[in-house]
Length: 224
Image (cartoon, rainbow, N blue to C red; front, side, top):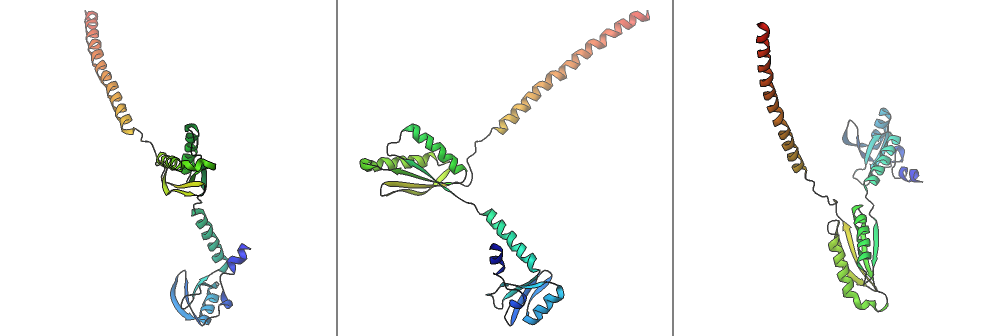
């Protein structure tokens, strides 16, 4: 079905029923010519005349092998789909009196969702008479947004709709990164190497003096 839909989008050769067209193609200068001359030129080159812009004045046609043209269109569609980013919306539910343990558990999940590029829909559900604590629910959501400021930004402030107070948080483009003390490590390495080189330079000088005076005395005894 998809292949037929793609092919039906374009008219080719004798299907093009207009008086004149603008032709384009590889190694071809864009020009306007009679449809018969355009079809004759396509036949001479062993390619098809494909109508790519029917609404233009005059319609634009491309000189290209039709099967190659369809292949290029499919490839372009696949590339466009690959570039599209699918953003999912993850829901996190609170109560107006959520304790710290449950709050931190859900906060950790929200950090993971935002790091993966998903949106977070956080809401407080008021059951029964708990609607009296709507201000407490709003404070909870604002605290939630503040704790996630390194991972996302508030897309809409808390809004009460019925028994739910909802807030949306969108992911940031870049995830937060901790600074690494690269410069300090390099400086420490340079100091250690310098400290190791100093004793190596001094030791050969001391040994050379002892070894140099000793053999001379022994050599003089042998000469006598």
